[in-house]
Image 1 (tube, each protein chain N blue to C red):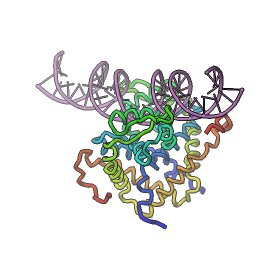
Image 2: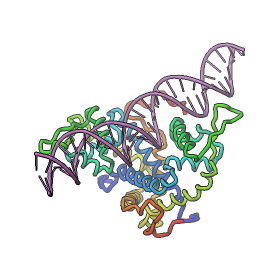
Image 3: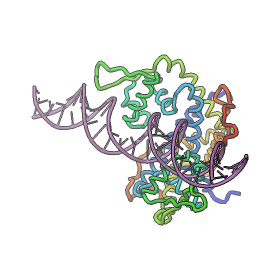
Image 4: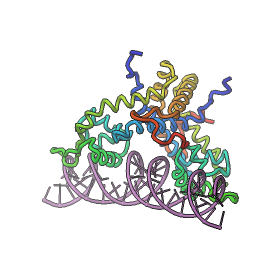
Length: 162
Length: 162
DNA sequence: CATATATTATAAGCGTGCTCATCATTCAAG
DNA sequence: CTTGAATGATGAGCACGCTTATAATATATG
């Protein structure tokens, strides 16, 4: 395409950044009454799907570092969303369970998130929504694939690590 | 095939979050050699467009709080990307200028960002890219519009949400 | 002049991500 | 059992966003 990238593609990063930030902000404004951040909500979805999940597994699924999970779980335990239980079989492991409060609020928060999505998509046609989702999924897949070398050398150390 | 329109819409927030995070990560992996974060890059773009811009104006344009600009500028001054100069006319004001280093690196970093965009869009057709950008712009506009009061009363929402 | 208000920048402290380092526990080898 | 590597969780400290509060300066008004 000789058309230049300036049909908006050059602002793609800023756009994605803005939309993510605004969406998170709006969700948190709605959920603030419940005292739940978006990061905490993402974690809660995983815990609801798999009660007793370990922190290590959460880190893997959420694609954040185990230490970040530790901190998140700390605060969520403090605010009564989840609880840690020891695993009798492996005492290194802390299993994460939703509290009754979390189970009760789950459906409400989910529909609250749905409202934010719906509001953000006002004026976007059903077919464009499908294209949007498909494009975002493709992008996530492309970006999740291995980094094609930062310029100099690829094979530093971590080839077999993961 | 298509069961319902909400094919994935319920994961919109997670998708946007993932794409933004991965895109930022990849950019920063490339730019790490230059010691520039994506937040710093966003600020640098503004400073390049308007040398001598004030911190208050940067906060407004970047839609972040003035204190966040202070900290960003602190670090960028420390690492030699920008410099603060006092305004003779108004001694409250600190005017921000790019350093020679910043001016020299600008084009390189810009093309680096373009590479990340292009990689992320691999496999997305030109027409789908246009739809994507248009949809994201619509979403940003929708979300930037006045929050319908974070309390309990949401009067103007179209009532469409599940 | 004195004082009240607005504006610009910064300070303090928190949430959520990171890296690097540490501790406890498990497991594999000897 | 002892040693050593791997694994799960956490601590320390940093980046970058936030809110709330302050300091310094500018400006409007009595």
